[in-house]
Amino acid sequence: QVQLVESGGGSVKDGGSLRLSCKASRTITSVFWGFDMAWYRQAPGKQRELVARSSSGGSTTYSDSVKGRFIISRDSSKKVVYLQMNSLKSEDTAVYYCHEERSNSWGQGTQVTVSS
Image (cartoon, rainbow, N blue to C red; front, side, top):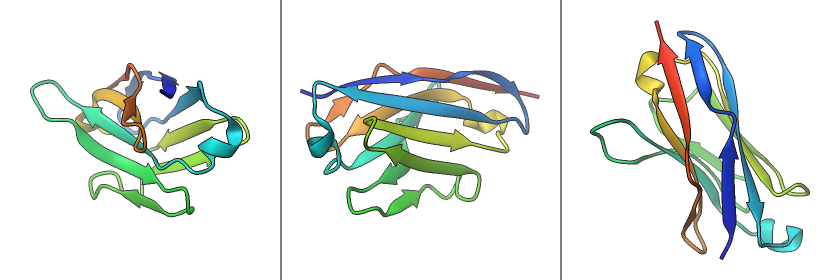
């Protein structure tokens, strides 16, 4: 099964930026090219929600709450998916998880805290 490790979380002020990374292992680059990858988040007391998705075909989709502020990208040669988060708000505070759809693999999550 694919192993996913997130990094890049932290604490920022309203309006700040962070870039999350998700590194895949136990897979090879040519297979990673075919992965549909996504970022989810889960805030305390709330259900996990889809934030952004990057398909193997190159398309990207975003939740309405982050559209225009977050950008998902990937470097398949490095087997890494990124989530650039700009104009952060307190409501973006959550644990962010990386997900690979084919094997339904999840990372351990990385905490993002946005304070005013």
